[in-house]
Image 1 (cartoon, rainbow, N blue to C red):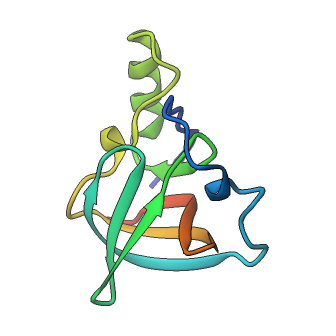
Image 2: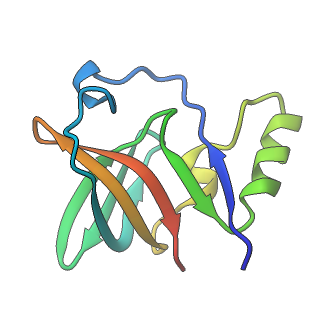
Image 3: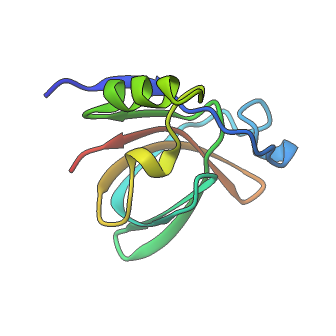
Amino acid sequence: MRRTLLLLAFTIPLVANASPAAAGDRENRTRGTVVSTDGIALTVDAAGAPMTFVVDENTRVETRGGGTATRRAQSAGRRGPSLTDLVSSGHVVEINYREADGVLHALVIRRVR
C-alpha cells in the first residue's frame, strides 16, 4: 500500500496554547476508531476511552488516496483536502500527538483501516 503524505490546510484559527510550539516536548501515540470529526477536531475511541484531538494546518495526514484527494481539492481552488475528506467515523487511525494544558494536539494522523 502506498501512503501519501499531505498537509491539511485549514482556515479556522485555533487557540494559541494548542500550537505545536506551546505543546509539551514529549510525543505520544495512540490508536483507535474514529467516532467523529468536524474538520478542526477528531474524536477517537482509544481502548474504550474517548480522546479528542485538535487538528490544524500543521497536522499531517497519511492515508491511501491522499494524493488524489489533494489534486482534486487543488483543481477545485482549495489548498488541500479537509480532514473530513480523508478520515470519517469508523476508520481506524494511529495518532501521534502532544498534550499541553489538557489539550491534545494531533501531529500525525495515519489511517490504518
